[in-house]
Length: 107
Image (cartoon, rainbow, N blue to C red; front, top):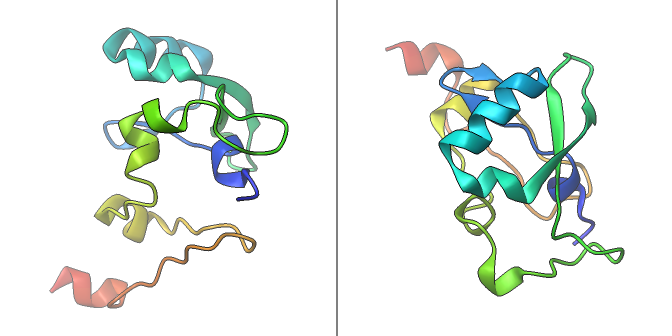
């Protein structure tokens, strides 16, 4: 309940991370759920980071019962996340455990 996952969100368009504001505007036109987020910065790989607008000053969701599907499914681990090397924050109560090595995914 540190709120880090609500302050450091990345989005993808197809197989690419969103890296500029134009891409984010396109996402918002595609699906209104992205209007619940705002740009909060960039990470070391120049990928945009987003913050949920519903997060309060105590890192609690003001709209918990009406939160988006993106939030409801967290931490849904997809193959893109596994193969992309994404990790949770050290302070997070969730951990991503890879069930097999990259080499075994190729088989």
